[in-house]
Length: 291
Image (cartoon, rainbow, N blue to C red; front, side, top):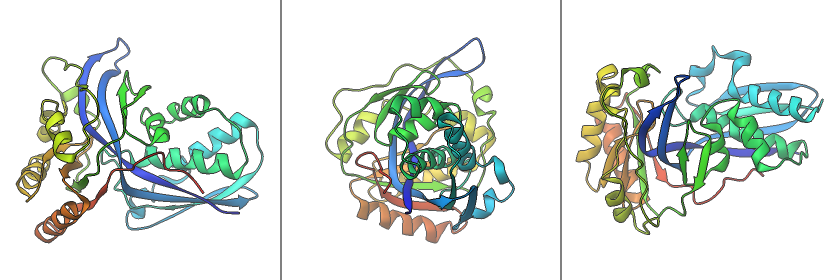
């Protein structure tokens, strides 16, 4: 028996920093979506836990070893249900590491979902999300895997409805954004950016998002100036409806009316900036299931 799970890229369509707790954690308000661009995890029965990583972005994880979030998720789940079974895990890595699109968190979520199926575990979603939160603030949203409003430090999730059919282009300048971006940020705290019913067309979604922003953008550009170049190029692409930085990493996105428009834009960016990472696709319509 083999179980596979898709690990989609997480995209913060907007990200407002609304406050800071006494313990230093920042409070957020964000609309999170998932693109059908991502990694793939396969799990097979085995006597012990092991992980093999390949794919175009595998080299960036070579130094992580046993501290990889996939193995940490597997060990955490096994400890929670007191299971002694193992699993041979294979991660096909396509998303760049530390890029602000939740690659590691999505991989961990995929591992939890795949192993839950492989090991025949019965756990409520709330319990699985609680386990995921111990691995990282983004993991609960990555377990949800469809559009969701995110609040608190990432633990408060509320369904956001179905996103319209749209094309999305993700671009990263191959620069890591330091985690100090939160501390570097200056200015007042933002406000909640939620809008009414989810728009049913890509253009209307882009218009609804325009009053919102990513509150980390200015600080991020100060740390990684290449982000400004990415945003400028995305904004100038034919058919680009909205260009913005995603999350707390250097990856930026642009919305298009459809996937074909996003793919044409990807070809243009890849030709002009061959050293950048870029990928085109659409939104994940619903929860990505393991099989």
